[in-house]
View (spheres, helix red, strand yellow):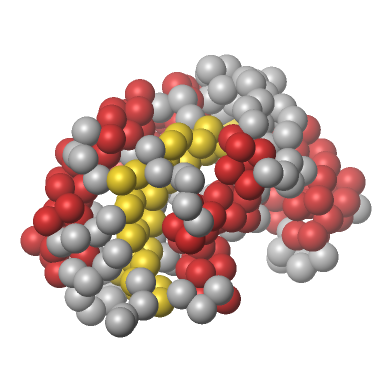
Length: 276
């Protein structure tokens, strides 16, 4: 009798990588699918999706670049229907708090008929250490088009733990876990904590969205990426997510990790040092 195969879509991302590592450590049969794997999986090319799903019993889905982009809702619905045809028993979807499009993608998954678990997450801690905010922190000034809006940032490790629980334990099907960190923080406050822990002078500067877009254009950031950044900072980060939830406790029976612990651990790696 063959062991259960778990497919990871987005296995090189912040959460997918962590999910794969945890499942592998548990001795699970893990398969990553991306544009570079065989068979290949590309969100822009549905012709290869069926082959990637072949033989999988469950799957973790992290849509790239974001569920807010045009076509994402239809893609999730199509993938879910193909998964049913291929015998996939359970789909775990990483969703996003505060995005109407993400909620629509969740509904498409629910109505497909496949067993599902939805992890609706807030802004990741790791955006400060593994994503586009890192360069500004290293340079000593993080410039963003956001003021005193507070967000309950969450550790990607907590998201991975919830996903692994849903993939390996009973009792998580037909459930939506809205997961956040334990406290509300501003971006300026987060930068201040990083500065204190590293002993560096790191400033946080707020600019208007138009000025920020001009900066991105000058840096030759692709237009699609600029559109998404504008959307996130003018819609999702407008205050709608200024609340803390108990989704991590519901899923894991323990509280979520705190940003201060993340900062101490990450500072020790040297990633926030000035690279000039």
